Length: 256
Length: 256
Image (cartoon, rainbow over the protein chains, first blue to last red):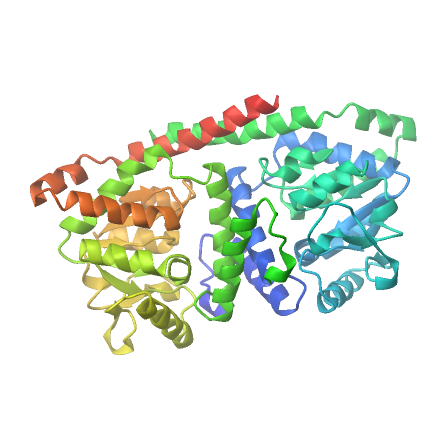
């Protein structure tokens, strides 16, 4: 599609990312609906100024501490996460000791295989959620996202579910798991329900989590748990909303 | 895709609209990138509460007055507009006397034909922008959206360009045309540059414009021009930003 895109377009980088995702649909990594989800993310990212807000550094650090101190941490991969930052997901898994598990709303064998291939190319050594014989179910979910690995998400104590839907976040929390999410929409059920919500773009937040994990590994487990216990998701959520609200108000002031 | 979607999903209607748009990609009406644009719209619509804010009623009325009082009004159709509300676009054209013209960022003969067919099915009698022999160009645009009908947008005094990109809005304004847009993102270049910006979902705003046009037709032209002259887009823009900002602040208050 790049033949259509003039290099001097003010949104060149953003449009290139879109075209990469369209290619990922052709490669079956992403469901077409994943493009719509990306658009929602773009809009919220635009609102926060397309950079990681300071108010998100706390959730990022808490998330890294949660993965590091968990007994059985899992990183859940959907099509968008795999398409946008496969290497960064592998690096986070390695830095925290979490395992990667594929979990899809629009689930098909073809997509699972395409994502597995992509993740292996990005350096992943073990990928859960691919063996139908080991399939378990999360209760109270109607969609295909209920299908999880019985040796992965089903028995995990901490699950990192970036770009998650609200149903599944709620169900995982109800199962007593600590749920970490990345969601640029601070009003979504996912953001409101998760134990730790990171309002940032996945391509920035995941490397930031990895850097935080590498720093936190210098502490002992008790110190890491202190970081985690000191975190208040409701307070962070309110701060995130105030951040966007203040940005809009400033822009409104400029315009009037 | 609906086999995946449980009917009790809290976002059922929204997901159905997404699936319709995915079908429209298969039908070549929509470019895959159009799905990403829809996602951006969804996000901003979510922020305004998924209904037409009161502060948008002024721009809607001014837009109807602009189309009614123009000498050569044109309604520009892209893939998303055609896919989302073909009948409403035809009704607006009929109520205002404006002509419909197809104009695409990812332009191809195949897409123009698919959209023409869709619009004819929706009741459109004349569609501009389909005859290559009559093609003109808007200066200063790199993308395919520069191609316009020499008997349509090129010579129009007022152009309604819902879901437009910033480049083309700027170029049309520079050509001295009155530009009306629908854009749920109040921070976009399109919203900031257009003569009249409507921050609302196209499926709600276009029927509202038609209703406003039918009301305004009861007035004489001088009275219509008074409606138009009394409209201040900068003021409306600032009001729209304050509306979203206040909504977020209230939500942040609830959460803290």
